[in-house]
Image (cartoon, rainbow, N blue to C red; front, side):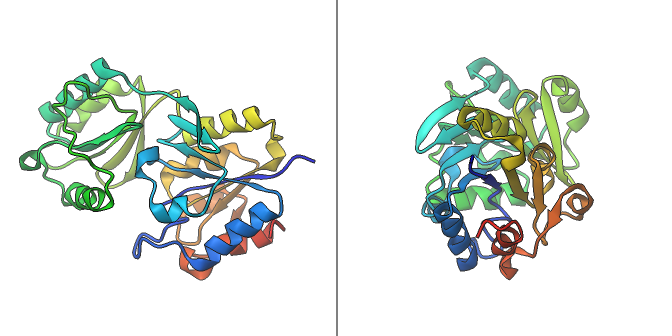
Length: 264
């Protein structure tokens, strides 16, 4: 029999967004699922270089990162797609022109505009955390060899989002994450394409696919898998779109879901 393969989002699913910790019940559940013969994968919007140590310590079988722009199995890179230097430079220039705050995320680097140009307190907060965690090495929008995979943006009252959207709506998926916050991913990549890639590579039947998430950027993977699970702390939009709603992250939600499906 083929094993089940389970895909976990990070923020709000594995990692509590208040404490930046993984609940002990989650650690135990993931380890037990592996011991029972199931495969466990991270499936995140983050690039691979933004994986916290506490996530790495869970010893996942592999990673789907950057909303499907990167796939790794047992520490071996199987797939990676970047935008290339020319398009990356163009987008960075347009973001400046249209006064849009952004974080540009890639396999080999995370890029920020200069502090004087950043209006969003959220971008500043994330930048500070990236510096603290060692994820950010000082790359800027002006780097001559800038090359990223996807991006997240925050609009403000001075932003010309409509012009930016019109420029790239035929090439990118604009995932609305709330208010003025968007995640922007090449149309040919998603959390779902990452699942399809690794499932085909490992010859896992579709009925053996599971995904657990909590936000709108998880929709593609939750819609793709046979068995979709929303955390109790999810964006309520997900609740009517999934197979099962588990408990909150801090109420042993991961363990509760895996027990529900008899995997632990």
